[in-house]
Length: 185
Image (cartoon, rainbow, N blue to C red; front, top):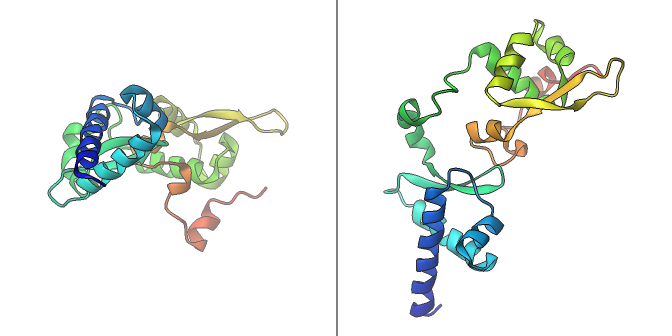
């Protein structure tokens, strides 16, 4: 790559960086292309340059993909110090019961209230209500069963909260943990 082309790409990467800084939501390459008026190929090259820039030890940020879009995030190892002040205050900490219910939904979705209660062994009404209020889960359909019970699944906010690009990025369960989330179907 010539020096002129390299300088031009650095300028375009700076534009992409500014867009990511100003936008509060993760942006796809197509959206970045539209906003910046650059081709998607140039956007991809600029993102690669930014990934390299933010991988340096002296950077407090990283370029990450969440919910299918690109965003600037504090480096994971710094987040423990930052999240109390800069985390979403309305979310607060989740109780052990809320985390357990959320885990069951995340790993077993789509899942009904009765199925959640079967796995937890206790009523899930309050936890489901709390998780819906925090926009971490939502109704995703109705089960083809008597009474057509509502099924729940995770939301984009869930992915953002746990810094995941997709549900496939959840940590893999070992055999014992996996059995914990299996329903007698």
